Amino acid sequence: MVLRRLQRMGSEAGHVGSLRDEQTECSPRWRQNQLPLVSSTGREYIMRNAGLEEAQAEIKIAGRNINHLRYADDTTLMAESEEELKSLLMKVKEESEKVGLQLNIQKTKIMASGPITSWQIDGEKVETVADFIFLGSKITADGDCSHEIKRRLLLGRKVMTNLDSIFKSRDITLPTKICLVKAMVFPVVMYGCESWTIKKAES
Image (tube, rainbow, N blue to C red):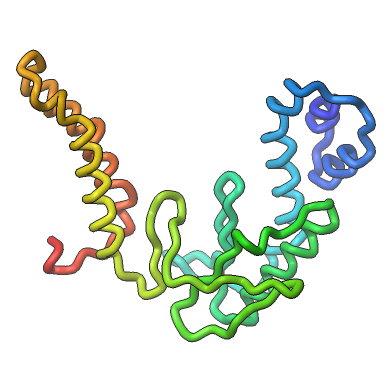
């Protein structure tokens, strides 16, 4: 029933309002199957109401002004200054609380390219980090890609080790082994390479 309501409505506000008013009992199977859709709708509602698209806080990437990136349940906020970043974060926090969701401070991290003061939200300290994994790639505060390149090479070596018995097998032809390397090792090593800045020593 909730899903039918979501499909009939055009605005995210209507979606969330409908979910608040819904009193129908849901089966465990329905919850399991439809929770991603409901959760995604809620996140979209929060972000739109937080006014991130209209906010002045943003950075320029490839000629575009951007202040947030979203993928699944991951959200990254970006700004030129500490004050602007804090403003974006508080907007998201306030809109989340309006629909009964809480910002997970333990999972919230701050990374800055320069000095930054210690942050506290609701009495909890927000951790400042020098690097973090974003969509499978290691991002560092200084923009140095050498750590990520080394990490990717190690991950590729691990895949090679797991395939060791196949590579040593005399029953498998060399062309097949080469195909396996191209299909299973190269993608792991080269993941995210489009964004790498390679130094002369690494080329």
